[in-house]
Length: 111
Image (cartoon, rainbow, N blue to C red; front, side, top):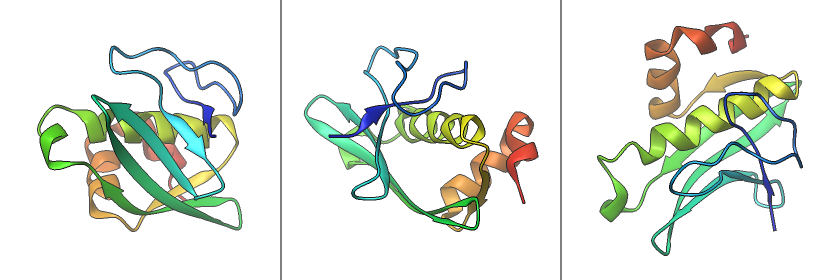
């Protein structure tokens, strides 16, 4: 099982995440993805790590959870995780690339 991560405090892997009404975002390194469970469904953000860069390859949100900010919450926490671990980020996934463009507080994570 993955570890809870993220939150605006930039907690490192294994430390408690800030709680969102939906629950905690988890890093599941066995599957190279972040997970957020809501109402029995799971939003996912897949990544790989290349030379200290966390490359986001895909974000998947179940149809019933779309339009509610779920993917944004997932990615915000994933980016905070990367920051806490001293990683840069690359958005090969269009959602992540757009998120970073819209949120200047994460632009320092770009390689």
